[in-house]
Image 1 (spheres, helix red, strand yellow):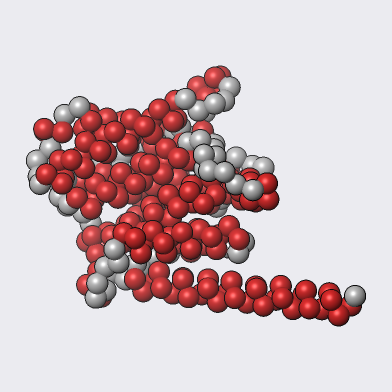
Image 2: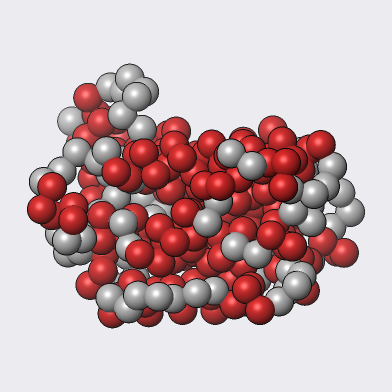
Length: 280
């Protein structure tokens, strides 16, 4: 019996070492491929590779217990995104309204964001992968996987406390970072329509918010600052002809408008007490 336990413990240790090694390799790959300025990266990964790396990253969060990887992920983001995220975080934590991002006063994407746009792209892909692998209720999961998902989502919210009172919770961090991305890249048409990749990043960010609306606290998803960033794109669904650019940009604009409408629908139709929803 003792020998059997010894073997079992040895196997657990081996598995833990393997997972830790995978974690180190993936983190280093992300740092090199997505955390460096574009001028220092020889070639960009295609969408398939980015999505697979994002999927592995989420699986490490889920099965490796590395929830701190959310905070680690923000360390590769451009300083301007982090600063904008902190601004929105302050607004959400204090209940401040009428907050507007800094991109309204600039005509082009800040240099540090433009140079490290791959890190921003990867961040939103991880958010989407998290829904696919962990949060979505539309995917059939085993009883154990469902329990693990529920525990992880609770940890993401900051335990039993509301994320609005826990600015260090992953859910708070994700929400404010998505606000920063939508603000810096999406709120100024001159920046948004300057590249199809900008529209794609904002569209993925909007989709991620719509997915989180199904389980994240309304104190975050329903905050006025975030809703304002979404509403400014609703008109693009109905008037893509006003968008100037390539066919890819024009079509992307219409897709973005549709994504925003879907996102708003998810927020509005959230199943919860109506009084709580109106006062959140």
